[in-house]
Image 1 (cartoon, rainbow, N blue to C red):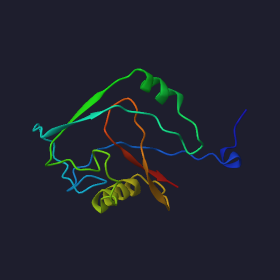
Image 2: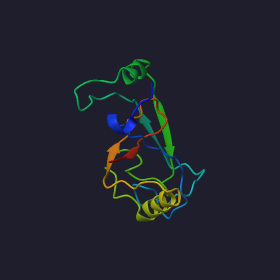
Image 3: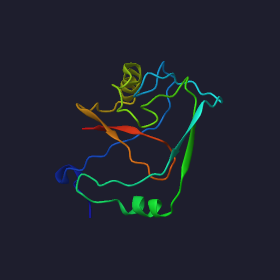
Image 4: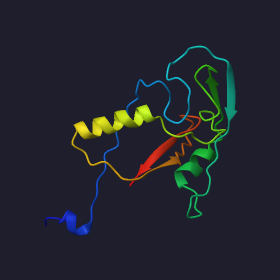
Amino acid sequence: MLMDYEKIGLKVGLEIHQQLNTKRKLFCHCPTVLSDKVDGEVFRILRPTLSEMGEIDRAALLEMRKGKKFIYQYCKDNCCLVELDEEPPHLPSEEAIDIALEVALLMNMNIVDVSYVMRKIVIDGSNTSGFKELCF
C-alpha cells in the first residue's frame, strides 16, 4: 500500500552535526580553539528532571540509579559559565548561522521561519551542558 505523505502531513528534517571553525562558540563568546591546559575541575552527579508533561524519562532515571559521578576538566581560556551549565546560553553566533544558512541553500534545502534554543538533556555524562536549536 502506498502512503500519501502529503495527505498525512509527514514532514522530515535532517540534522547535521558539524563543528565549525568560527571565531566563537555557538552559544557563548569563548573561542573554538582546543587546549590541553587544565585550569580546574567540576564534579557533577547528574539527575533527571521532570519534562514539560510532568514525567521523568525512564532512560534518564535508569542512568541516575547507577550512581555515576563525573569530573569535567576545563581550560579558562575557552570555557565559561554557559559551558559549565551555570548560565543560560547567549544569542547564537551570527557567523555560525550564516554558515549554516549558506550550506542549507547550497543543498537546496528549505529554510525554517522560526528557531528556538532549548536545553539538551544529557544524563550519561557525555557533556556538562548542551543547547540545541528547535526549528519550525
